[in-house]
Image (cartoon, rainbow, N blue to C red; front, side, top):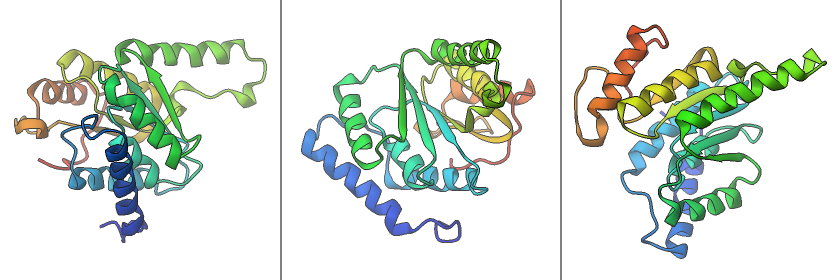
Length: 220
């Protein structure tokens, strides 16, 4: 549980309550649906496990929405860990409110890239590679595979987008890093948002293609 992993349950609960109270003050209608407290805690535990070696630098995720997952990833890690979110911005009626609340509680720890992740992720890989090739100081170079200490796929739920997000995140994380996929069921089960066929298929392809190795199913 949370206590065994070194997370103060009160801190995780307080972060959840603060975020929701602030969002209520701004506009109750501009809220992200589909995320409950249990799912939030699953993400808290996931991030804590991924960063248990205290060597995490950055957690990357596709799909910011209102920012519940970003809060979970931030509150469960140390202050030197950043979270980089990639989002299409389709929910701009509340995404800006979420960004302001995240910055309020976690200043200078959240990075945000707006745009189609099937384009912004490969662009990031290209930018890192180009920066390294133009640098004369190898000591300051960071490989693309060292950019994310952990990755969380929760963006578009079509096969094409989920597959692209998984594929590009494997290039942005080092071997052995945790790559978690939301709305996915390894046994192919479809359970509302718990398992979506296109995402299940993308995850299955990533396993069969050797991009990732399945460790465990978090929830059903």
